[in-house]
Length: 576
Image (cartoon, rainbow, N blue to C red; front, side):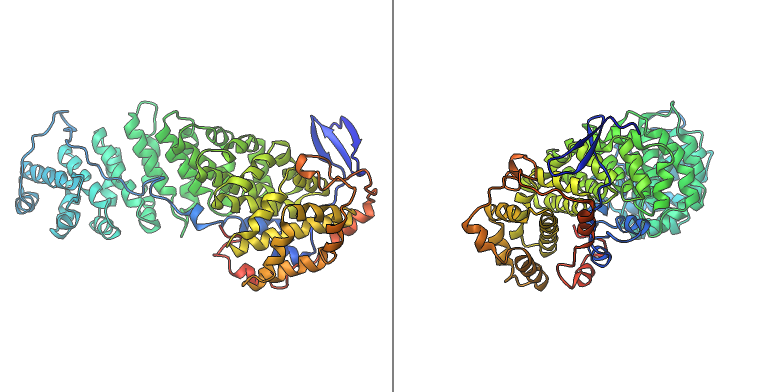
């Protein structure tokens, strides 16, 4: 690395500049003792364990929202083209009993007419009689019709009817599976009639979307190679959308995950589809990748190794919300992986895109962007430095001040990770950004877990200021923000952990608060933080490397029962 210059800050901290970036020189990380850090999120644990814990973030972020990507889709087109002749079939109205009789007839024409009428009933927009058709025992005959290759019209209508039945409840999908529909539907993926083939793709997508059991039945029936073979530059866009959506359902669900073999079969075509320009194809491809990266480091590595990250980061700037959301989710999943995987995402430019997403008009995007940022901040100091250099701190502070509460919580986690993992120089820059005032203002919220974390962050910064002979000025700043009154009030909080944390801060840092309430210090450093001035004022004492080392070893637990606090989290390393 070529070093362009060396400069000394006002307080004696060495800094290197490279391309305009500030790089810390031999800065010790502000890590607390091992026991405390094990209890605060994941600091102090080995890297692989820390990263693995970051996978299970939040049920709200992780759940598959139906308005984001449909598990199942029903075909409600008003008419069906004849796959053999291209002509439209004539509509004939039949009663349910006539449909039953016709489906069970030996005449292929009567079977076709009755099956088409059943399909029309199943395709009506409101209250389709799925249950009636299932209870009428039509599924076994419909499955038989799938095998009649001399009658492609009948195959098409049967596949369509089964598609719509499978779009219903899990019990109705199960009836289709138990009727033996999967193997003949997979066979139809090789049909010479495109409309028949496309309808089979749709039916298999609905079956796979029901859950991991039926997904794996579709996979074990060798559907993936057939689906992959259908992807070409000549396939109609509507057909390609159905193929992509079905592939995404084959990537979906993680109890268990799809097999490694299946993922390897799908990744090349997903990487190819990611280069498409159609927003629906891109959306379902990104959702597929988001499911595949919602897992272990090894599964994340499978996706990262395909080289898709630069394209995913590019799609994070999309004006189409249905593309932006899953691409951001996928990149967010990737940075829960190893430091190397996170570095690949950073190198792909994710930190250059995140600032605009933190300011996105939709709070759901702000939240996902802040969650992704919190995982970058949980990495090594080099990642934190890139975070600073890419201008993350101003929008982060803005979210702490004005964001919706669900977004503010993510921002608090980002600050907590930054504080426990950054160097002294980086911590100074965090304070300079104006982070303390919104943190203090959030001490009145009802979420006790977040309040405890904010108190810990404040205590951490106070201990750093004390070692740098700047605690009095920081205390004056916190008082000016109304922080002392808020912390004092929390000593009476009904939650014992909140009360104990607040009590220890008051006893350890504000026991002589009346002294500096009477006479303010001449130092301008901490009080000028909100204006963006330097942390250390004219009277700051030089800081030796020995004192910095002592600082890194000197932190002690703020409250005694962090383990109990961790057990309250909903199956993850942090709440949402």
